[in-house]
Image (cartoon, rainbow, N blue to C red; front, side, top):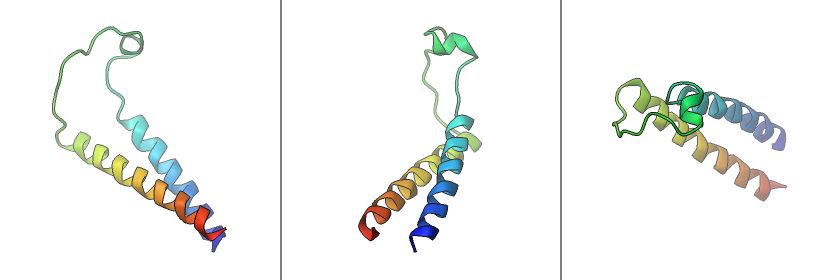
Length: 72
């Protein structure tokens, strides 16, 4: 059983990393160093779906972690 949880957690982790990387905002290093992009905009379309998927994957990741702790 723990083998399946391990595999599921690895898959969810990879998907979570990809979804976080897809959400990058700003333009290159200028946003990293504090320049540019100081405006508020709402999420729409694909950006909103990626955000929701990231939240869902994070909850699944947390649930799998707790399940692994309880089973061992």
